[in-house]
Length: 201
Ligand code: HEM
Image 1: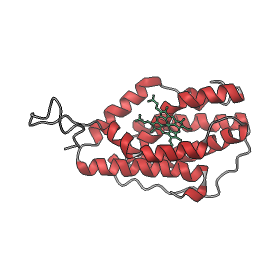
Image 2 (image 1 turned 180 degrees about the horizontal axis):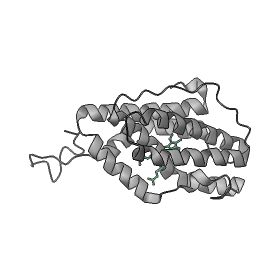
Image 3 (image 1 turned 90 degrees about the vertical axis):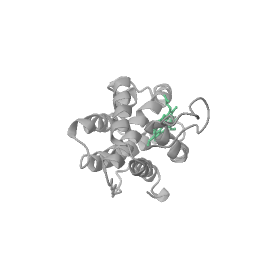
Image 4 (image 1 turned 60 degrees about the horizontal axis):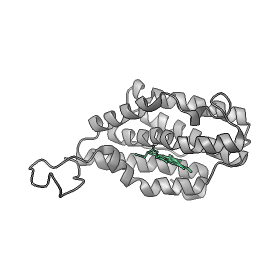
């Protein structure tokens, strides 16, 4: 059974306590990792920072795609593959000159639940993209057809909702939850490494 969110309140007297959704467990379990990535990035206000952001996102998506594809069916990672393509095209538009990483970290996802945790990070990055898109449009003049394909998103809210539903199906036991959080934290670590290799994975 998953962790109980409230412990008390209207359901406290019930034998079945309300279930905390996997999404909120992942959100809490990775809050510090998210804050670290935000700190490493800073605002997207010049082509150099944007180029580094796109290069790091490309590493994250490529590494998660390769590792998650071993654990999940093709349809679960098709959105990730499409995002990887968008990021590569944005990088080509921007001709950012950001150096290619000489080596990329290996991501081991031990189970389906761990792979779903990593997918939560790549899908969730698209949520925050709303904020980043405004910064990139204002500072760099990106658009959905030039340099801003990834930040413009694709698939809309339906993809996020599908992911949340899939998380509930795949992450059930306490062990699954621990593995999903580990997978998500490792994925954040890949991004942090790609932004700043000294940060480690
Ligand atoms: C300066 C950089 C960033 C900013 C300002 C930012 C901002 C945000 C915001 C505002 C949300 C909430 C969106 C919503 O609820 O509608 C969000 C969610 C999220 N972001 Fe970021 N983000 C940044 C970087 C990143 C990066 C680099 C990653 C991944 C490597 C990431 C992963 C996520 C995830 C997984 C969520 C979903 C959290 C949840 O479950 O609600 N973010 N971000």
